[in-house]
Length: 265
Image (cartoon, rainbow, N blue to C red):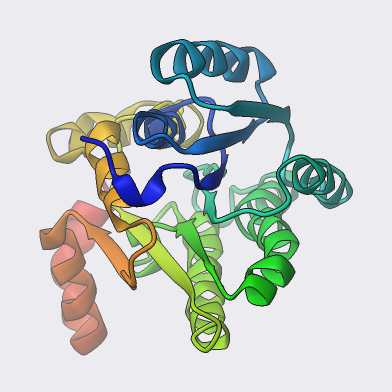
C-alpha cells in the first residue's frame, strides 16, 4: 500500500542492509520516496539498491558506514546533503546487542554497544537537525527497544543504551516541538532478525521467546505508517508495553513475579 505523503520525500535509513531497516526501505520505495541507505555491508546495500530501482523506479543511493565512526558519519552525511540538499526523514535503525551478565561483558562490547546504539545515533541526528530546523520540517525516527523501558538480566548494557536512546529522543522531541519537526521512538520487543546471531550466541533466548517474536515486515509497516505524523511512540507488541506501565507503578512486585521469565535469556 503506497503512502502518498512519502512520494518524492528524501528518506535516510541507517542499518538498512537487513532486518527492519531493509523492510522499511522496501515500503518507502513502494511509496515513491527517494532513498539513502546506510550500513556496514555495501554488498547487501547494492543488492537492495538494484531491487528497489528495478521494482519501483525510485532513486536509491547507498553508502557504506559504521555509525560508530563519528568522523565518517560527518563525511558521509555531508556527501548526502551535497547530492540531495535536504533530508525529510531520518530513521536511526543501526544497532546491536550482546546478552551477557554485567560481570561477563567486556569493555570492548560495552563501548561497542554505546558507540553504535547511542553515540552513532546522536551523530547521525546532529547532521540533519540544522537543516530540519531551518526548513521547519522533518521527522526523526529512533529505533529503541522495550529493553529501554524494562531492563532484564543479561541485557544490562544493551538496556542501558536503549534507556539512553529514549532519554535523548524525549528531550529532542521537546526541543523541536516549535519547529514542526517530529520525533518518534520505536520500542519493539524481540524481532525475528539476524540481531540474535550476535546477541544470543547460544540460541537460548530465541528458543524461549520464538512464539512471541515480531516479524520484521510487521514492525516496518508500523514505522512507515507513522512517517510524517505526530506519533510519539510505537510500542510493539502492546501487551509487552503494558508490562512497562506495570513496572513503573509496581517495580518490586514486577521483578519478583517476572524473575523466572526474565532469566530465560
